[in-house]
Length: 570
Image (tube, rainbow, N blue to C red):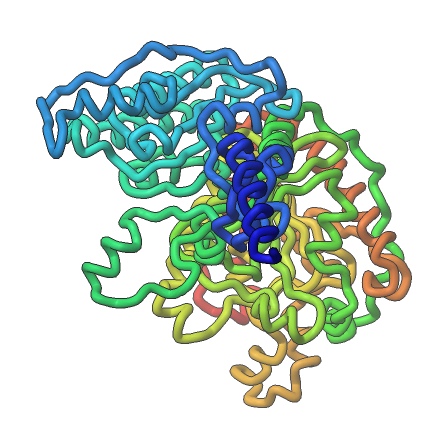
């Protein structure tokens, strides 16, 4: 009897399951959970249990990013040809025809105009469901046409990539799409029109090595895989097992290749923030000139002590208090994201600026993680990337200086620290936009100067800027590091002394007792100073700025001509 009841129940369950439409329930590839289809769609095709991102079609991707009803498609009728007469297990035209029937589209790419978070954009999307999102002539043409339309209309470009690489069935014609799209994007960059590249899962081969990697800002969806060669090819070539997480979005951000990893549900907002920064205009109202009277230390060594006080505001606190919004951009695009340099896009009273600075960290754990504000060469190259970003879009650059100096180490020399610093100095000397630097703690040697060449140099009243630390000077010249206070006085490294000799342009007053005792008050003083300096610099044509900057640098130094006796020069 029991067996008959169990059998009846099973038959009823099977009948009910048979009545459920296909796709109503989906198994998550991440955690194995059974997911109800409508609920999955409510979560933008991400698992509500583990966050696994399911694939999206191009249409679904457009619906995710574009404001409802705003996407207008262009060139939907472009279709692939068969330039090589290529046949593998079946002729290429048959493969294309099957993909057209499957997706309802002519090829793997779509492009058009839309609004994202209320702002205009040119949007192009690749569909992995169409022959693996591979790039043939149609994909290359559509991406290039999208870039050209963005250039003509000066509208930001957003491209979402999901691709296995170049389409082999089109041979050399497919390969040349890499150069073609890169050329279109170079023109867009030269014209100062922003491009946001979004890496979806997966992005490999020719797409990864062309337009997907050329964004001014590169964002990857959480868990997306991307790289040049796929993991199977790499393992077969080098005969090694690849580490867990290799070529994932998280791997890319850790190795400095991209700016951010974003959950799909936050993607529209993240892109919108970048578009909003680029759409911002106007200039902050100038603040009142503050008298550098309060909070000034009594002597050089006391200033050194206050400049190094671990309780002083760090870069993250200045960014949060001084600017309206901040979008961190990460990585040097080559090796890593050096955490001792932090930078990105910010708004000051609604006006866009690029911010770059040293970040020492708070406490021992964070200090070690950030190398106590001493960048590796990759940190200087990350800063240089952001400097070029500011120049490309004509936005002022603000740098915050707080470092003991250039990091001495084996790795630094292996990676050519000298070259990295020198490149930054040359870049800043001719950077085609206004540059304001402010010393908020220690300004140590070339490590500080690599962020300190510009049109205005500001110093908080209890800060220092020097060719070497007092301890280093005392050890080398006095043969006694204990004479560091004497060396500090001799180096004339305080803000007051540097203002008197024409190196610093302005002293920003600290609250009584020093910045470490009043973070909000210090941030207000910094904000007021930046408002005034930027308001003045925005009125000066770039060619005039560059000429003044060069003359400023040429005037540095003290020397005499026509005498060889140093005693006669005093």
